Length: 349
Image (cartoon, rainbow, N blue to C red; front, side):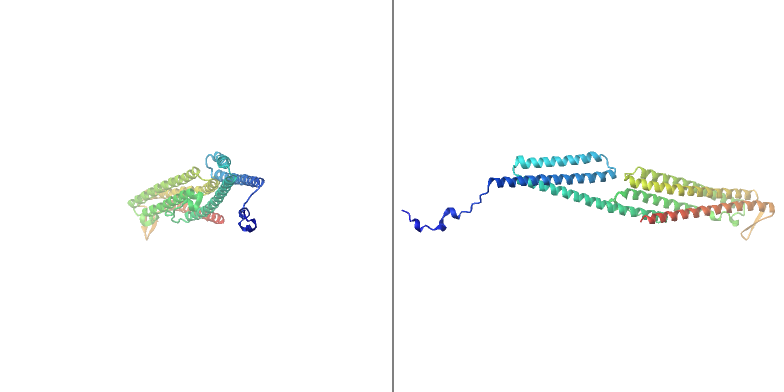
């Protein structure tokens, strides 16, 4: 018979076991809390996704991207599908609220990460567009000051949505500067400055040479005028057809057209006056051809034998000087207009 009095309580099997019994209602309550939390995180993630979609919709609308509304609705529908799949996986496949809760956390964190990335993208775009605006002002300044910009290059990562416009303006400025240099060099090579000097008008051969120089100069001016008009028209057309946010496109074109309306008018008037000068000079040379033997060149001065011929020659010279004065006034007006344009640009900085 067993000796129960010698039995050691420390050896009692049942007393030494650590049982963790939990009431059924407590477990059910925890599962209910996890389910509710899962719904909350799914809802928060969905709201964040909708907010991100709305922000992207505004951005894409501003950028005038195609099918913006369809894309936005697709993103919302996609979020709903993802939530439904995760919800079914947690409740029907794995049948554990803990897994459902994990899925909801992952969806919430994923949505949060995406919207953070969206804000970063928008911030980077803003900084790049701001740099693009400042570069556009600097570029227009360089063109107005006839600086060489042919070697410049622009990347979208640096100058944002204005990059295509910057490239077009650079090409315009480079061609405009080239035209300006070409006309000056070509006219200088002809030696137009010397055609009306007395020493160049001593005989009929010299006069005919001067007339040829005038003819060549007018051809250069006509060619340059046509090329300038084409250059301006092509820039307007290029920007109008460019994939550029409407705000930038409208602002630039309005400013450019307003500027060209004034500057183009002055330039046309300048070319017209210059051709009038050469036309009047040509008429003077014709007069000299018909007056051979009626004047003599001495000490680089033209001396007429009769006052009548002197008076006729004086009328030509006076008309040429008046036209030259008008040319100077137009050039001064263009310079003032350019300086005002530069001041207006610098105020935008």
